[in-house]
Structure formats: C-alpha cells, structure tokens
Image (cartoon, rainbow, N blue to C red; front, top):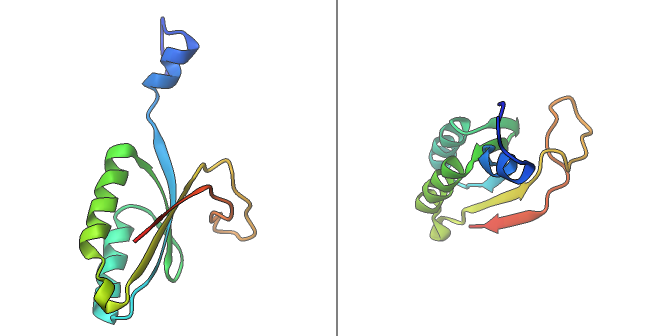
Length: 108
C-alpha cells in the first residue's frame, strides 16, 4: 500500500494492523472438536492436529475471540489458548512455518 503526503507516524497509523495468533485447543467431545476445527479453518491454517496459525485484523480477531468465548464450555473440560505475537518474532523448525516464539497469551 502506498501512502502519499503522510509523515512516518501517519503512515504507521494508516497501515492495517494485524495480530499474529496461534490457537491451541483440547476438546474432549469429537463432535464439538470438529465444529471448532471448522470454525478455526475460517480464520487460519492448521499447523498441527490441535493448533491453528493465523494473522487477523483487529475486527476479525475480536470476532474470533467472541466466537471462542461462546464455544468454550468449562464443564466439558475444554481448554482453548490464544498466543499473540508478531510473525517476525518466531523460530521455525518445520516446513509449515508454524510459530515457536510468541509474547502474549489469552486463556479460555
């Protein structure tokens, strides 16, 4: 994206902000786990059996968090974690380029 007549601070403000996320989960129910997989496939790429990697704009990220809050059922023993970070801040040891180093965590 090209920005004309903007200083560096204004250019940074005008750029789309994305959140790099790694969502991991442990859902006991096969039926509910399949529903969660379908939900997460709409947002990102599956990098392991219970792990999705995604880069989302703020509105999409907020929507994902709302959907996961609705999906989460403590009484079922659900465990869903979202790790937040920057795509540039990662160490990769596989051909799928999954995240290895991230800074913030959201627990459900």
